[in-house]
Length: 157
Length: 431
Ligand SMILES: NC(=O)C1=CN([C@@H]2O[C@H](COP(=O)(O)OP(=O)(O)OC[C@H]3O[C@@H](n4cnc5c(N)ncnc54)[C@H](O)[C@@H]3O)[C@@H](O)[C@H]2O)C=CC1
Ligand SMILES: Cc1cc2nc3c(=O)[nH]c(=O)nc-3n(C[C@H](O)[C@H](O)[C@H](O)COP(=O)(O)O)c2cc1C
Ligand code: SF4
Ligand code: FES
Image 1: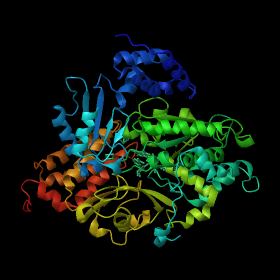
Image 2 (image 1 turned 90 degrees about the vertical axis):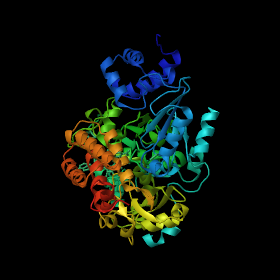
Image 3 (image 1 turned 60 degrees about the vertical axis):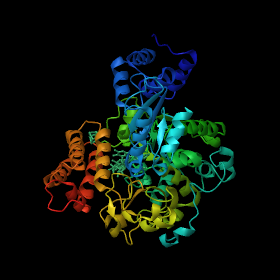
Image 4 (image 1 turned 45 degrees about the vertical axis):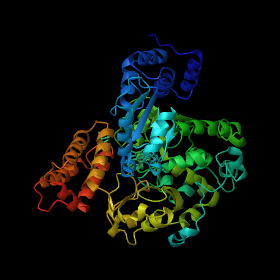
């Protein structure tokens, strides 16, 4: 599949570039634009970002690899990032993770066959007072999870 | 206000005002008066340096965790030479147990924005970036909106409020990397690179973003600047503990009835915070241990906590630190071995890998802790862990290696029985 930015994307990219004295700082935000558009930043998307910004492909690749929020391959429609770090661990984060593994029939790091859900274990999301919690596809936080709440969430998506 | 009066303290950063995040509500409640004052009241503020002096006198100790006097740090900026100078605001907040800056993003973003503008004026800075962790997507959007509003009202941009001071202010987001909260790593990330920390010195004031003078401050630190300008350094110093004055946003998580962020003076007794503010331990359990300021600060046993308060001097007497004032509270059922293993997993996962003692050390810590957790460890592994921590501390580019080593050393020392009981061929009976 050939990846292309839309006109709106390109306008947004121009706005991003205007924030900085050089082009390189646009790398992270433009990778976000790309991920929002295509759902991931696989090597082809990384190439598109590099070409659009006129930066070396190796640079864009290195950045994409360094940061965990960039999906280097296609993911499920909903990515559930369950926090099991310190406060979430203490408040039952692993129970939630295991419960979701059972419910979805996959292990952490995997995607359901129908492509609906990917499940991950993640590090502290800065919501420790709302533990245990998870984040949906790099966006909405779901706080104070219980097994029932996790079930409802999956069923509602 | 002495620390004993903390119950009468009225929050300043997160007061109970509806819709304070909206710029009109903020202005109605005295917002942007501080900025107006420093820019236009030449009687009170002779020049930008006089603002630095006031902030220095207030002794705002950096709320990012290291506690460096903010005004003093500002005074390290070299004289303006006409070229670009930067303020980089650290909203990366990723230390496990820390979730306080988000409270400012959510409830009072303009207090932060105003503080950042005052800081920038004081240091004759021309461009401000606020770097927010990528997971806080909602707050990145909110910050974009808040900055637009402030721009429209003329608090950002050219010739602010008729002064000849001009500044640009941009928000930018991370993409998932704890290390990017370390200030020089954040600079690399802002420059569009992988977040590998830089060797200090040179400090960012000398050589920061694109090699230009740069100051980095935490979001909460900058929000306090607004209060200092409005209420004066003497007010700030009168709140809380003498050596670490002012209000603090305490984040309390773990086994308490009312976890959350509480704004109170520094120096509140730890047990009062847990029992009075956070409603005590869940399910009527007993307190076992507390991590006072994020995962890197050494854990303290409940029986060490009598009379200990949340200020650096008091915490030092029980061998720990204030850090980010993110308290993680553990009840009597907490398995300290599992808990420590999870911390070692975190730091191993987040090490950027530049320095051998950190890259290898964090890996070993996790591996040995996993072995002990699984019941396959031996007593000598505990001593090996302690030995590894000694080889990691103070030998690396940034403080992540220290942050990984401290919890291991102190959790094992303070809960040695529990660790030995989990080891094979233990001299103690297995519980
Ligand atoms: N908020 C969070 O999520 C996290 C906070 N931390 C905290 O970070 C702390 C460590 O931070 P670091 O920046 O490594 O501490 P540091 O002590 O090296 O520096 C603190 C600040 O003072 C400045 N500074 C120190 N000495 C200076 C000098 N001689 N000249 C000029 N400037 C100087 C530094 O540039 C920096 O801005 C830990 O204590 C930990 O509590 C750690 C992880 C996450
Ligand atoms: C590994 C590591 C991670 C850090 N993460 C953060 C962070 O997320 N937010 C923050 O404000 N400071 C963080 N710091 C501290 C910063 O390096 C720096 O001291 C701080 O941003 C300076 O601001 P302040 O003086 O206002 O506290 C971190 C330090 C280390 C060593
Ligand atoms: S101490 Fe660890 S995280 Fe810090 S620069 Fe070295 S390897 Fe990277
Ligand atoms: S430990 Fe889960 S959000 Fe901080």
